[in-house]
Image (cartoon, rainbow, N blue to C red; front, side):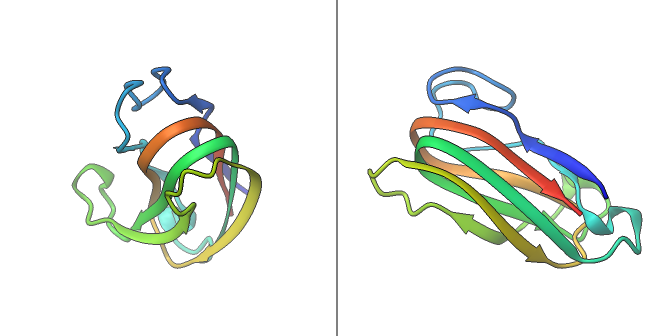
Length: 120
């Protein structure tokens, strides 16, 4: 079993990773998905944990070998962009022969993304 961290703790207004502390829309670094190793399968479990989160988290994936030049598409959406803060631990399963996966955040206007993790 392989576990990759897509996002570590990211608090609204505090720069961390690819988040500059002020943007509402941004993208995490890409991590290897199940088919990166060819033959690992196509089922991936994503665990999202948030506290008072306001915004939407999209899980984008690609079938391409080179993440920086990849064509990305949405595989899962968490949150609805409402002004109601979410505090939740949310596991989800995505199926596909993805080579890379990343989080794309839109409308980030409050709270904390505690973690986004993929296991396969």
